[in-house]
Each structure stands twice: as structure tokens, then as C-alpha cells.
Amino acid sequence: MKPRQQSAGIERLIRRVLSIDEIGVIAAMLGICIFLSLTTDTFLQKQNLISVLRQASYIGIMAVGMVFVISMGDIDLSVGALLMLVSVTMSVLFRSGYSPIVVIVAGLALATFCGFVNGALSVALRIPTIIATLGTLSVFRGLGLVVSGGSPVSIDRDMTRGWFFTRLGEKSFGVWMSAWAMFAVAIVGWFLFTQTAFGRRVQAIGSNRQAARYSGIRVNRYRIMVMSLMGFIVGIAATFLLAFQRGGNPASGPGQELYVIAATIIGGTALTGGSGSVFGAVIGAIIVWLIQNGLVLLGIEPAWGTVATGSVIIIAVALDYLIKRRD
Image (cartoon, rainbow, N blue to C red):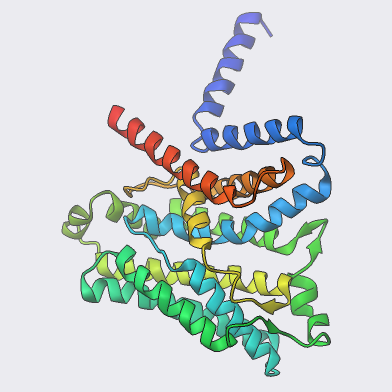
């Protein structure tokens, strides 16, 4: 191959790489990994990396659903409380002797119904979803405390030896099952978001809701469908969280909505709606937990993790705004 042809081939490869939508967030993740590998002794240990991936998985699963919500021009603040409500409810069902299949179906049904309620309230009351879910956040959290009695719901040790806990709550090929679930949900979410009419209409609604309505898209129906989908995906995250924890903890959900929204925005989903990246949101979830993990390894007070996450949200939104204004 001639040097000129070789050079042209390299240039085409570079252009292809740079044209990847998620290239910025991938570069940020690699930058954090390089920094932590140089400043700590334990970051690159296999056990630490697997742990980060597991912790990011629950946020990553929910971030896939949040891509649809934010791309549509809405925000769901209730996902953390809903995660807790579903996990403790499933724990109570397990403790009552119901089979794993019944518990899974009941948990997913409850989560989907709660998502439907969020969407229906927004449509019926004609209020932004962020306001409706601000209210249901407290409702779901309160219901979770009522169901659990305000304390962790333990499950009999004999029950935790069943397939639900041993298959969904443990590792497969050295990686936690929740991480495999995150990747599976991301692939299905990517296909639904980018390759179907449903995904294109969701983005059209986020770009211009009025124009979407004039073009024949049933906006209210899609808003309810997306919020129901968000609830269903939270139910998936709650299922794997319960399988790992082997019990429901009312303290495990509140505050997670911050990390889910952060992961989604960091991943490239525009806060103004109209566009998003499912794979970017998953990488964003990993970045969020890399930051948390890095602070611990560096000996910094864990409370600074929330400060760091909030700062990253501000930076990501500011960069997105500046780029769009320049365009």
C-alpha cells in the first residue's frame, strides 16, 4: 500500500472514530480511569473494577429509561423512591412465601403501574412531569416505608438459596448479573430509541411538542407510554438490586434519581429534549461510580461524591448549551 493511500485510510478511520456520538463521554471515562490508575494502587485491581461495574449497573439500567423521558422533554424525579418501593414490596412477597416468578411479575407490574400513574397525572392535570413526579416521589417513598415498616425487610436464609438469588444476584463469567442485565437493557433500549417509529416519535415530541401534535403524533399517549416504560425499567433494576442484597432496604433508593439524571445528561442526552444516547447514558452511569470509587480510593470524604456529581451535571449541561448555541 502506498504511503498516500495509507495516510488517507488513517484519516478516514480517525474521522469515523470522531463521528461516534459517544466519543466525548468515552474519552472522559478513559481519562478518569487513567488518572485513578496513576494516583491509586488499587483502582486497576480486578475486584475493584467488577465492583464499580455492579454499583453502576442499577443506575445504568434506570438511565436507559431516563433517556426516553428526558429526550421527550420531561424529567422523572421519582425513580429512586420507586426503586425502593418495588424492592421492599418484592421482599415482603418473598417473605410471605410467594414463588420467585410471582414476585418478579408483581414487582414489574407495580413499577409499570406507578410509571403509568406518573404519566397519567401529568397528562390529566396538564402539569410538567417534573412537578408530578416531585409529588409521587414522596408518595412512593411513604408507601415503601409503610410496606417495610421503616426497617430492612429480611428474607429467610433458606429462600436466598433459590435460583432467584443464586442466578440473578451472583456472578456469571466473573461479572455480576446486574451488569449483564444493564448491557442487555441498553441494547434493547438502543434499538427501541433509534430503530423504531416509537423512538423517533419520542424524539420528535421532545424537539417540538406542538409540531409533533400537528403532525398527528398522539403526544399525551406517548407521554404516558414513556413514563410506563420508565417504571418498567425501574422494576428491572429493583429485581437485580433485591437479588444482590437478598432483602429490601428502605434506605437503598432515595437519592438515586440524582445519579440517574446525572448519568443520562453526562451521556449526551439533551436536557432540552429531542435527542439522546442510550449507550452514552450507560457510560455516564459508569463515570458517576468511577467518581464515587475514586474519591474513596483517594481517601476523600464520601460526602464529596454528591458534590462532585452535581458539579459534573452543571458542567455537562453548560457544555451542551454552549454547543447548541454555537450551532
